Length: 44
Image 1 (spheres, one colour):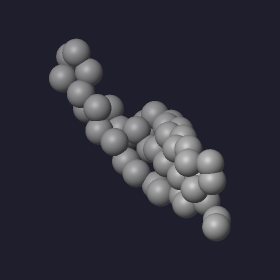
Image 2 (cartoon, helix red, strand yellow; image 1 turned 135 degrees about the vertical axis):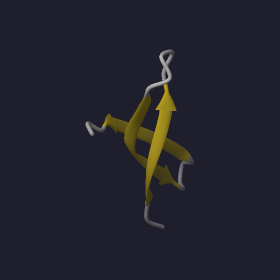
Image 3 (cartoon, one colour; image 1 turned 90 degrees about the vertical axis):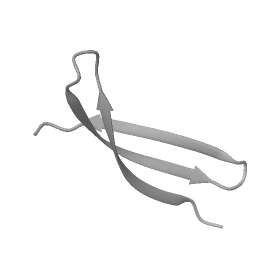
């Protein structure tokens, strides 16, 4: 079974209520079951 790559975009509100976009890649591995979430802050 191959690994699964899921691309997600996460919006985070910081303490000053500024929206910070995070471009994240979620890597799901079946055997053994692991999940890695790697994010890079997007500049808009």
